[in-house]
Structures are given as structure tokens and as C-alpha cells.
Image (cartoon, rainbow, N blue to C red; front, top):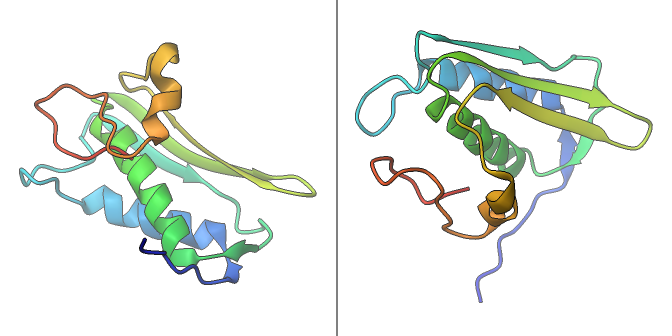
Length: 127
């Protein structure tokens, strides 16, 4: 069994979200098409004042990147927004979009390895 190592470091979530957002605004998919469509407004609302968290910055960035990339991939017009809030014990990250959505009855499935809910003309291995 292969184990994935995790680094424990101070992480600034606002910085991760800005970097991920900047990368996805100009990213191309496997068909060399822009990930972010012209008809989609893409914004981030992650305050710089959020407290730092302890974790693996690269792994956190990868998770946020995949979730936001999927939101952009399945939003053809409207908006995609990354936001975050902090309470005394946690930071809540939200990715909101006007995309095709995930039916309630299969939402629990999306976190299983290699589960794909999208039509077959899309590529990917799931989240």
C-alpha cells in the first residue's frame, strides 16, 4: 500500500485561492479550449484577513483547483465564485456556480474514487 505524505505548514487560504483562480482564468482543457468560458463570470471572495491554517499547501491547492475546475467545466453561462468565511474554530470554503448541478441522490457518490457523473463526451476521472 502506497502512503501519501502530507506536509504540515502554515497555509494562507486567500493566497491559494488567488493562485488557483488566476491559473484557471487562463487554463486550457485537453481540447485546447478555455476552461473558463466568456459567458461565465469567475470571482473570488476570500478575505486576506482569514487566519492561517495548518496543512499541506500543495494538497489543499490541488483539491480547490479540481473542485473549481469542475465548476467551470460544467457552467456554460452565469457565474462561478470561490468564497470563504472564518469562525473561531474553522474556515469554510464555498464554490458556488450556476452549472448543471449534481442531483441530490448521487451527491454522496462524487467523493468515491473514479466516479464520473458527467456525460460521456467529457473527460476526467472524477474528483
